[in-house]
Length: 41
Image 1 (tube, rainbow, N blue to C red):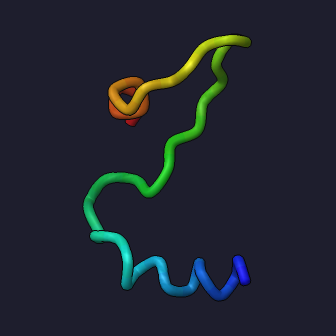
Image 2: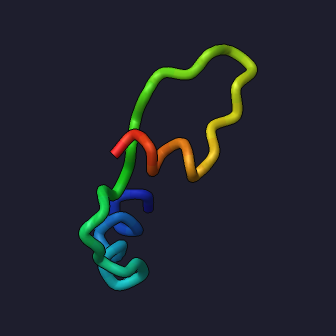
């Protein structure tokens, strides 16, 4: 099911010039915000 859903992601989400995901380490108990991810790109 998950694989089938992922194949439809381009129908569901706007394709932009921004990255589709951002990954970085955070300290325990930290809750990352959207603005934190923007700063990482």
